Amino acid sequence: MAMIMGDSPIFEVRITTCETGSILRAPTEREMATKAETLVRRVHARGELIGFSIKGPSAAGIGRIKAYLEGVLVEVAQAST
Image (cartoon, rainbow, N blue to C red; front, top):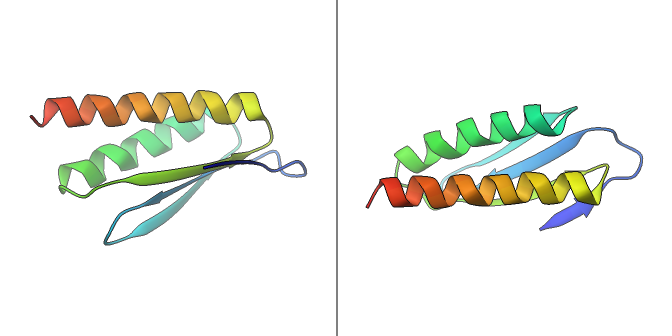
């Protein structure tokens, strides 16, 4: 899920699993992607299924973060098989 937050210059990613939920915030796409990747890798190492949603000030930025995190999910899934 993606949502544009017009008034806020902050990106927000919500990462959820069966066990937990986390909200990450960052002012830039790069910082957001780094934070989210770190958490995705940590959660995946515990064997949990992962879902995420993104909010941010621009549709393009949300799309880039989404594509990046989807790539990370594919990478960690392939590494564990």
